[in-house]
Length: 258
Image 1 (spheres, one colour):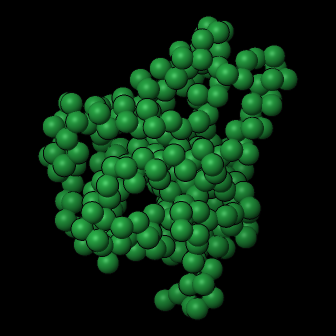
Image 2 (cartoon, helix red, strand yellow):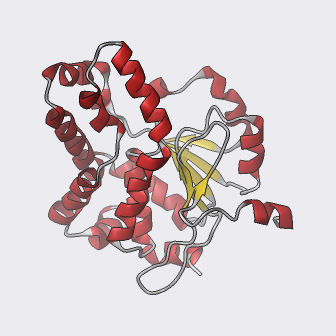
């Protein structure tokens, strides 16, 4: 049981944002209201950027959530040895969504093309691959929800892989699509400082900001591209969750809605 101070600490702003010392873009899905008027429980489902470099205070705060599992969508190449302290503190499970097309070899031609629309199209194509190429990873993620786990799930910036995972989870819970997109777009606000730092470094390297900016941001067109693939190729989200990923939607709703 959480004590009263823990409960008070977890009363976050309406958008669910949780401020940490060294973990960015972390949010609680609790408080979202479903189409039939039910509410996602607070403190059960957290999304975020990489928590591996968390401070001691961050780790202590995360422990108040009693996390059963932390799901990591990153590749091995995105990790650092300095993340050992976090790994010792939580049940941290790696299930990489391999982003091979985000390699330096793929990005450099974009930066040299001189056309920002190429970068934006790159991201749209990237998102279209999520529901097709990474079904096993997202199925395993949703199976944790079937098992009623209290969890944090993340990638590096908490926006792309985590964004699509959130779209699936919120859809399974019965949240309207417009709210799902709104939740997705919050990453632009919470990653703004980090993105500005990257763009400043790009400028120092004499590379055009306008070419890298679409790769750092989230855009409604990105997540809509992934959701449209679900509609066109898999007969809609309901069928995709139930029959393609073989997920028990009713069980997930019973686990987290009140």
